Length: 451
Image 1 (spheres, rainbow, N blue to C red):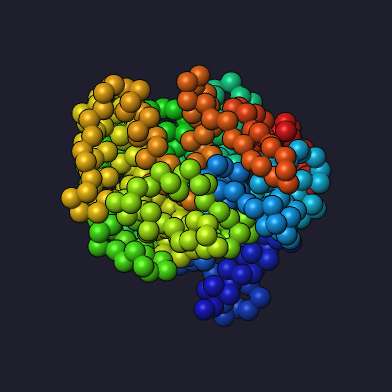
Image 2 (image 1 turned 45 degrees about the vertical axis):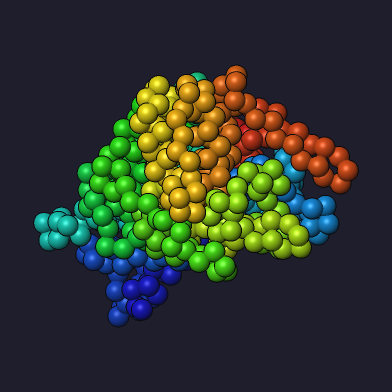
């Protein structure tokens, strides 16, 4: 308890911008300051800090998996959530003076993560090599994870020419001025942190709230897919699946349960969830009707993913075992990454083998009919449909839409009917990216996102 109390003092230091070293903050000489790898591991073990996030939720609100009835939309207390959902224009009032919870959450975590990295660098590795490696590898993984969270929400789809990346936090000093790196530089930094973490972490971790080499491979596959680096995404997916290709048989789950999934089920590799924004509340959102109808009667996801409330389908909850959205890493996502990349390479049989193995585990026993892909176009069409259906409410859909909109044949036009008006978000519209909070621009002048 003393240790975590002292960590609270560290947080106060961050928030007040004190120029003193955080290690100098000792309000009581009996309090323990981090000195060993074990101490720093205890810091990272704070699940309520590092494994729950205010990031990601806006991306689900912006995407096309749900809609809000007019009465619900008009009744939302948060004008920020209304602006996000309605793809509103930018301007200094987008966040209504309260800032962006996702931006603030990611960068506050990054300050702490950098403090851990700075601290562990002063610890002699020889005292506890395994523990030291795990601390540094875990901190590097978290730093990559939360930098990527900002990239996904505040940047357009990856191109090497785009100058508008994100500010990269490499220090625990809140007074350090930060600038916007290019998109290429930003992604390169994320990949570098993940690659360094890969060499330090064990293949599997002591528990699913800790990073591991498996989590690194899954994350590298996710990030490279978002960049349309399909060969590299496939490479890391194959590393992952060579070590663990176990799927959860949905026939073993209780479809009548309020929350059918165990948060530490066999597919979960790294558990992290979000504090759902109000639009994702089970009483507020409604799942897109065409999407809901695409789950057939023999598809167990129809009952496991949804409950009917007021005659309308709502998302029950996913791999966190509650209504909170799971945004961690799981085996099913890696399967989907791999099969898409294989399909793009024209390896249709290999893609179909993974596709069928995944879907057999999602359908009632003996009710799934094996498929063969006729050609690359057929394979991609079916894989992308199942990707959306399998990864529902994982906050990945908007990233998928943005990368698909780079093509000419798979672009997605998003439409909403809101208060008797239709609003449209065309492919590659600037509004796929949220504005940077005005307070951040005052503290650290940088280009604002066009909107």
